[in-house]
Image (cartoon, rainbow, N blue to C red):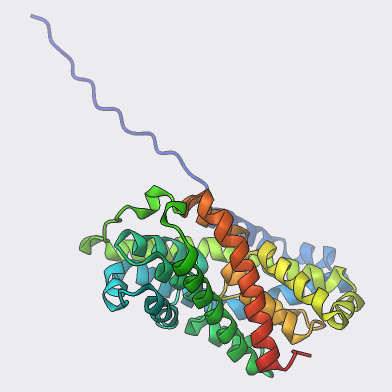
Length: 337
């Protein structure tokens, strides 16, 4: 009689995946161990200035960034999209105004606002209201406004100008969509109903959302701080002086810079404040345009709502944000000199 030998089930092979957290820890460890050597290598006046600007921007912005991603994670886990659906009026024009003001009460970074807007559309909220919330939430929430006040302690009017310009941008875009937007521009997958977070997985969703937003937004913060430091060291101060004298050119350059840098809205005020030679109006344009449209937002909108939507929505948003920033700057800052 044959005996059948049962082989033990094979254990799944665990593959070690290197994430950005491991890379960051390795860099910090190398920096600590080689601190004395790094001090000798970077003991150059220009590098000392650049490192000071880099550290100052990161240290000032990091608390607001952490607070922002914690709030964003809490909204994703504990605030169902149907809450906004219930409070929004059925008429699209009125819903746009309420959605814009809801951005003050429900803060979140621009990366997190894209899936929230998709969830709202999937649950039957008017697209105009959902898109208004998408633009308002990362730009007019208390975390961003407090961060702006800290970054510009001697210019409190910058907070009011940023709030007015950003809220106007969100509402104008919402009203434009309500009048001329077409639902078939949005990809079909974005219109599907998304399931609510299950009760037992809320804390897991909170932790995962906050961690993912922190890693992603933290990377953009470090990149922005590095660019700000490089600009303070490598770009002659007289160049910024020229941009300050040519106010139209300065506004356009800062608007394009906001799109390219793609900074987190909780940290961009500190980068703008570090450009001391620039007048207030171009800095305001930088702060209003960045949270409304940048390269990462364009990529997120393309992947979430479709290419047809992003190719129409992004250019119009850029023009509207630039116009609203200039108008609010002239009215509140008096030209921003």
